[in-house]
Every structure is written in C-alpha cells, then in structure tokens.
Image 1: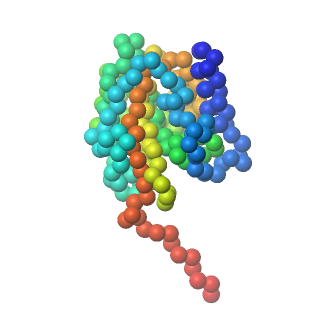
Image 2: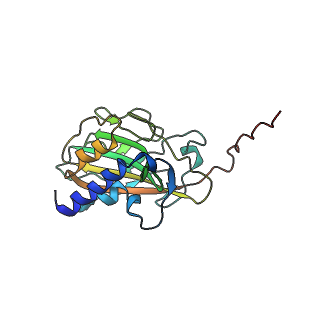
Image 3: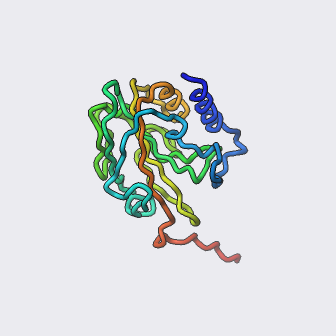
Length: 211
C-alpha cells in the first residue's frame, strides 16, 4: 500500500473510531477532511460508470426511494471491472451529515460476484454469494434510503468498487470492511443523488399540555 493511500485510510479509520464525545450528528462543511467518502479515500485509476434508472447523477432522489415513503431500492448498473476483478463492494454514504466524525453509512454490500453488474429496482435479497454489510443500524442491513432532515439537500453517494479479492463478513464493523478493501481496489465509480425532507411527511408530535 503506498504511503498517501495508507494515510488516507488511517484518517478514515480514526474518524470511524472517534471518541464518544463526537457521537452526535453534525453537518459537514465544504472541504472538511472527515466528510470524504470511501470513493474519495480509495482512488482508482480505472473508473466505473454507475447509473440508476431512478435519477440522473446529481439529480433528486424520488421520495419513493426514501424512508419517508416506501424505501424502494432505486436499482444500480455499472460498467464491468478489469479482468482481475474477483468481487464488487457497494457503499452508500451521506457526507453532508457526520456521525462520530464520518459520513452517515446507509448501506453496504460485499462479495458481489464479478459477473454481476446490475442490481434490479426493488431488490431485497443480495445476489448469490454476496452479503449485506453494516450500516448505521448495525450488521447485515438491507437498503436504508435517505431520510434527510429539514434544511438543505444532502448528497447520497452510491459507490461501487471492483476488488481483486473477496472479503470476510465484517459484521457490525465498517472499519473491518474498509481495511479488507485497502490495497485491493482495481476500479471504482459512483452516482450521486440529492435527498431532502419529504414535504408530505408528518411534523413532530406536539408535546402534551401540562395537567
């Protein structure tokens, strides 16, 4: 692993293991190092083109693909990785919100077979051989779409990595997944969608009046 790559990975792992004092959610600022996505921290010379039928790159994510409504997976397609590709990893992150000093982790999937370059709309079961990894809810979690808080739109990064290896089940440990990927990324790509609070979502429940 070359020194700049090792340093970037170490920075991310340290932020993921941040002290409990940083456990609160905060908004990132432009250029903030902690807001860098895995795609930014693990650059690859070969780029994959990632698309979804639900929205254009940089476009709005339909509310049907968010937790505000039906939370349907929007579907993803990507170009084939190099011939040395042994598996793909999928990572979905919101880097406008930080939890414990790192982008909010919405979804991961590991050991996607090299023959698979499409995940269908509404998919609920990983392809044969693949597994759901951790997200902010815990281990082995299925798609958790955006649930953007009130305020500006957030950027949701759907990232695909072609690896020259397969990885062990990371359980709840996202840092273990990233460590297993380090030095094995052959190609990568992403599609980014914007999320916002659903205007049809109910407001907060009013506090009960004192008796």
